[in-house]
Image 1 (cartoon, rainbow, N blue to C red):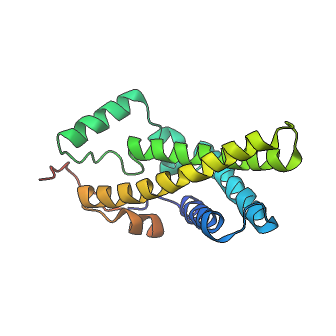
Image 2: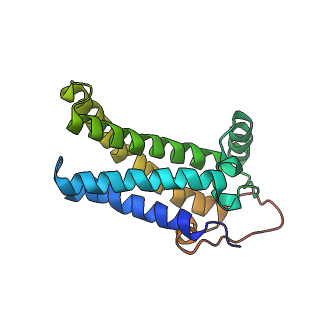
Image 3: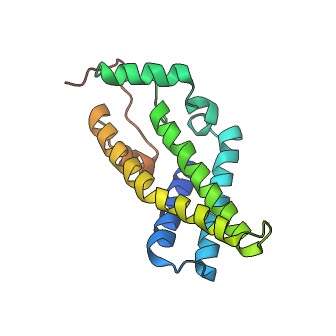
Length: 177
């Protein structure tokens, strides 16, 4: 079943490439670093807007991590049940997405404020920017590991699904033993 549309997949992989480029390959403060950073922020904004008007599984309302959804999902995980209702992102994945999006937007904002000196305290903005960038060294591997673990848990290749857009749908929930 088609779950993730082309815009969701394009923004996901392009943002991933941009983050890797800026963390590992571009020189901090260089023009290329800024262009890549602002492009990534722009893609996140596009994805958030698409979350308001896009296809069913792209919509933020489909996966927004409410306390009730989180509680039910955690109960299913602790009972070793696969909850088939999360064709798109489960509530924990949604928390990760919102965290990553917030960090990326924060990076763009602090990068802009550093360069424009609007707040007058470049050192403060630089410190926040560096903290946010360093947080990606934890968040990105956690995101990848979680996708691998949930692929095993759900018996579904989630990384492949984020490339093709398709996930396998079963009729009944299954227990993971």
